[in-house]
Image (cartoon, rainbow, N blue to C red; front, side, top):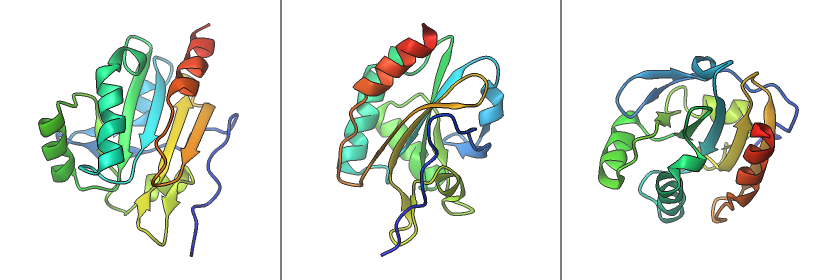
Length: 159
């Protein structure tokens, strides 16, 4: 069984990317450089149980993930059309980005792509305005992530 490569660590530069959101618009990490911290939330699949619960937590606590100085970007290998249907069904108004093609390229760059399964595992990365990884959490496919550490790291970053 092939596992993901080593995930980016605190202090590493964030890997640049441009992906399409659920509305067909291009979103790049560089869009937020110098203006907003970014939380990247990689997840395996739209419409799956744990992923639905995690993104509902983000939606319901959006003030912790999106504001004047923070932007959440949720990333999966799902196609843009699946992400649009899921966003519409769940009321997700934050960007859901498609890492569909080249398949898993951004998840690979962050070290959270499972080659043998063909999807991103649950990786979360807090990136500061200068493009540096400031906090990470990587969970296995069936493990629900705990966002409390993220909230603590964001509070320190805003400090």
